[in-house]
Image 1 (cartoon, rainbow, N blue to C red):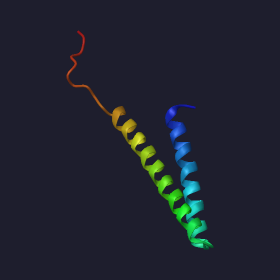
Image 2: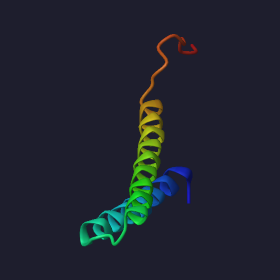
Image 3: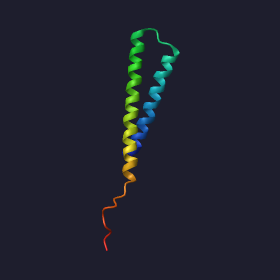
Image 4: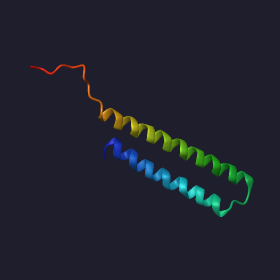
Length: 74
């Protein structure tokens, strides 16, 4: 498994966990402390997903870079 594949798997797992917490909040929370904790989890999952997205975007951009300053060898 390469690094990119690992990032995609981590992204998928994080999205599933994020959705689980969102569904739990929508189902109802019995006290404010639990609600605040779950909001913290959601924010953390969103942060992680953004960081993974940034890493994947940087990888995609670096794959498409062509160095036009080098001269072909003749």
